[in-house]
Length: 512
Image 1 (cartoon, helix red, strand yellow):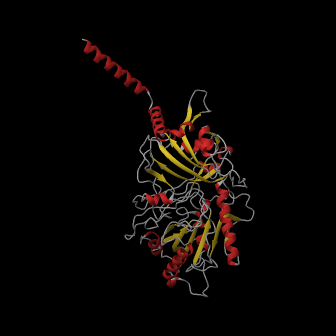
Image 2: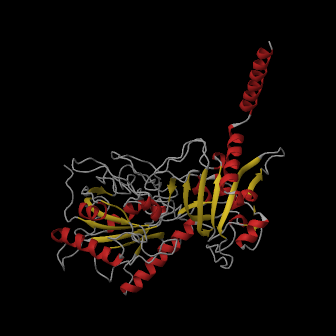
Image 3: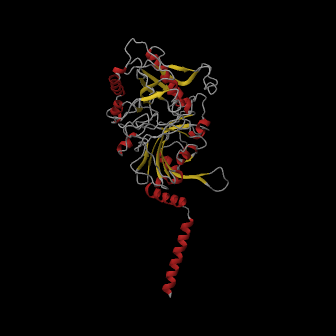
């Protein structure tokens, strides 16, 4: 009998324990587990625990809980200068955008996401088509755009640090504000990490391991730049590049598009009294390899480096890369080029032509081309064919920079286009992809970031229906010609200016 009651008591205790465990939320259990892990592996950070109250409710409710390790304090000297906020703290800005590098790991150290090239190379996830540059995203008072919640909380709140930790590190204060130059390591429970979806990054930014749902993540964050308005930022880059290129050429070879009186964009361009489109330039004087018309890629990376291929053995020298590509282009199109001294003829809006192009970012990184020889040189792929383009008929199928500029190009000659994202891929950009894909058709529409940062020089809606592949996706006109290959796509971030080098074949394309 005593044995029976003993067993019954044990069962009752186990049952009560199970009931209590069932009543404990998964979120609370995860926080307890993370605290135990921190106590074992990083006891020096226990005093840097952040529990941020939710100001929108009177009830005891936290916005998020996490631990922080400050690696570098950040820039406290550089003042704000116009659009660039310098070393001003992020949380002091009602609205701002940040460029930042990040790497995410699980608690065992496995990388699940990174934007750092050397880490991608070490873990064998590096891709030639991936543009390893800091990510640009909105970080204002409201977290509208999917910034990892823990990163947002660390940026928008005063972080309290343990006194002994601060003394050991030699930091100036127990109060830390994230800013340009800051490097931090965040230990985030899933609630303020990647949540119920886990990490599903791709496009060359993924790690060797996928972070499962509802798992803590360790996030390394480095803030590269803080600024007010991304549209002003990219417009400044384009205007600077055009100005310096014209000076180097000795004449204004880069021209603005002039609007017609009945142009339907006049209303949306209200206030632009010079009759031109802001942030959109073209030239019909470009020649591959000609230093007079070379752009020189005057804009460096956001992290200060001048070469997007800086860690590549083959492309370490940009001048060598440019010379190699120029030779490929001159050899391929020698027989198609208009004879020297011949009168050039503009394409016009109603004519169908074959278009070849190389698309780059302002730092010279090639994000896309339909020229097989260039694609093979850069990415080891031989796919690609000319795009059959008619400005009047294909107006909605390609970026509006093409609609505006291609009609002004000349048969049998090279031209070039420089455009802000307003006539490119806009506020949404294009997502990178590493999976095998079969000529997708996408439509990228402006989200509410346009409403927040709407600029009246923005062009037509940025529609993509398999036209500009945006990253080496086989047949760049969206059609399978039987010889193309399925390949990865390069990410184009929101508010990213672009350059297109364009060659127009001499003959019109038959409508038959």
